[in-house]
Structure formats: C-alpha cells, structure tokens
Length: 92
Image 1 (cartoon, helix red, strand yellow):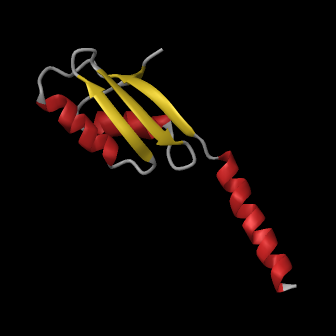
Image 2: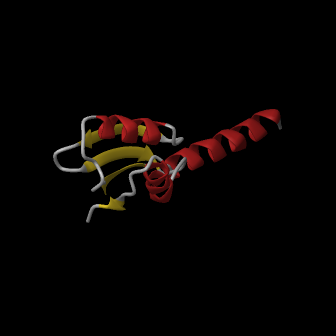
C-alpha cells in the first residue's frame, strides 16, 4: 500500500511539472533613456519568482524575459517594471 501511495504522489508531481512551461515575452519599455535604466529594469524583473532569463536592450527599448509560467504571469512582469518606474507593455 505504501508503494502505491508513493507512485500516486510521484504521478501527481510529474503531472504538475508537465503543465509548467517556459515562456518568453518581449516587453516594450519606452521610458528607458540612459545606461542605468536597463540595470534597474533587470533588477526589478529578477525579483519576480519564476523569471529565468532577462535581456534588456536600451536601443530597442525592450526587455526579453524568459519565465516559468507555473510560477509567474506576464502581469507580474508588467507590475515589476511599473513599480521600478518603467511602465511597460507586451510587444506585439
């Protein structure tokens, strides 16, 4: 019986992991004006749980963010940049 319960628990964990996926989104951050801006934005996004990679481009005024969608959502990324003083939108 103990093995059966262990198998069921392991199945549940693996099923949950199967639903999690890595997503990438490009955020338009029009308020970036200097070399310090990308650093501030990257620090803010790094605080969001589930963020795996961030590439901020000052010239394009964009942030490319890779995240685990089981741990965070795009709305949390937008909120993080906004709270850092750089409101952003999802790049189409």
